[in-house]
Length: 595
Image 1: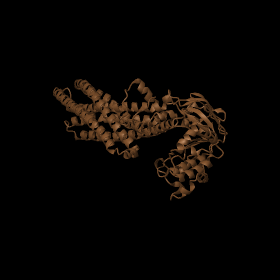
Image 2: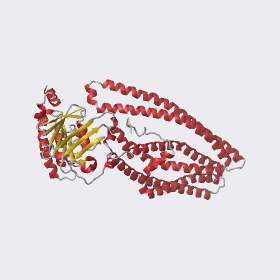
Image 3: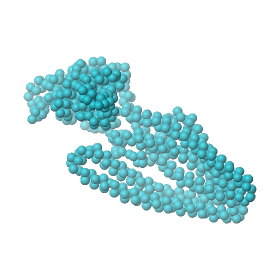
Image 4: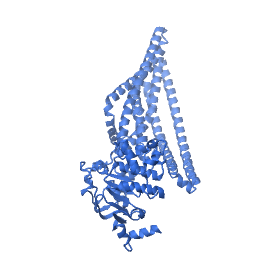
C-alpha cells in the first residue's frame, strides 16, 4: 500500500460516493454500535416522536387561524394550550433523542478509538516506515472526530429530515394537490442548478483545502527543523514559501466565494419566489372556496418545513460522504496485517540467547530491488559480546531489526537458541531482548515511569536498584522531585548522557537474555561517556550483547567483531586479529578514525 502522503485535516477528509460497496464497508464499523443497539433504537423512537411533534405544529397553527373566524375564545384557548403541550412534548422528545444518541456515540467511539489504537501499535514495522506519524495520528483524531459528528448529529438529522420531507409532502397533498404539484414543479429546476453549483464549489473547496494542508506541512516541517532553519539563516526563505502558499489559498477561496455567493443568491430567489407563487395560487384557491385561510397558512408552514429539510439534506448528505471517506481511511488500518498473525508457537521462550544467521538475504519491502543483506552467515554464543562494524549502509541496524523480528528475511534463517525465530511468539521473543539506541527517546512522564517501562510490574526497590547499576541514581536524586521528575517531551529536560543512563536502567530492569546496543556513547562528551560506558559494562555482564559500533575504540574488548560491507560479512575475529590483518577493512576504518 502506498504512503498516505501529506497530513489530512478533518475538513480534508475525502468525500466518497455512497455506493453499495461503500456502504458495505461502512457497515463494518457498526459492530462497535451493536452492544448499544437497544439504546440506539430508543433514540430512533424519540427521533420519530420529535419529528411527528414538529409536523403537528403547522396543522394546529392552521386550526388556530381558522378559529379566529369563529369568535369562539374557548376554542382558540384550547388550540393554543394544545400547541404549548406539543412544544413541551417536542422539547422532551428532543432532549432524550440527543442524550440517547450521545450515549451510543461516546461509547461506540471509545471502543472504536481503542480498537484503532490497539490495531495500529500491533502492525508491522514496514507499515510505519511507509507512513508519516502526523497522518497516522489523524486517523485516531480527525477521522474519528468526523465519525463522532456523524453518529451524534448527522445520522439523526438526516433521518429526521427524510421523515419531515415524506410526512410533509403527504400532508401537503392532503391539503391541496394543486398547490403541491405547483411547488414540486419548481423542485427539479432548483435541484439541477444546485448540482451544477455544488460540483463546482466542492472542487474549489477541495483545492483550497489541499493548499491549506500544504501550507500546514510547511509550518510543520519548519518548526520540526527550526534549528536547521536558523543555522542556515533561512527564516526569510521559509516565510516566502509560506506567504506564496497562503496567497494561493486567497485566490482559490475568493473564487469559491463567488460561486457560493451566486448559489446563495439563486437559492434565495428561488425560495422566496416559490413562496410567492404558492401564496399567489393559494389566495386564488381561497377565493374559489377550494381551501380555507387556515389551510393555506398550514400549507405555507409545511412548505417551509419541507423546503428547509430539502435545503439541509444536501449538506447532511455531504457530511455522510465524508464519513464514508473517513471510514475507509480507518478500514485501511484494520485491513493491514498484524504482527501477531505471524506467530506459530507462543509457548517457546529464549533460554540462553544464542544467535545464528544462516544464509540470510534481505531487502526492505518498499525497496525490494535493493539487497541489504546478502548470504549472511555468523554465530554468536550465549553470553558473548559481539560488535558489528562497517561503513554506513552496510546492514548493521538491519541485522538487529531481523533479530527483533521487525522484518522477515526473504531467504535463509535467523535462529535463536537453535530455533527459527519465526517459531517464537512475539511477546516471548521480544521480552527476552532489550535495546539501548544511539538516540534515546523517552516518554513524556517521570523518570520513574520511564525506567519502569522496562518491567511494568517491578517494585520501587527494583527500579532504584536498576538506576544505581546504570550510574543514574545520583543525578536523579539531585533533582528536587527525584524519581518523579518529569523528563519533558522525548526527554528534552535531560542531557544526552542522562537519557542514555535512563535507557540503560530500563534495560537493566528488564534483565534481557539478549542486549542490543546501537553505539550508545557516540554522541556524548568524555565525562558522560565514561559514566555511560561503566553502566553498559554492568548491563552486558552475563548476557548476549550485540553492539553496533561506529567508534571502534569502544569495542576493543569485544569477544568477537563482525565486519560488514554492502550487506556481506567480509571479516571477523578479535580486535587484535583484525588489527593485524594487512589491507583489512577493519584496520582501514580504524586508521581513518585515528586520523
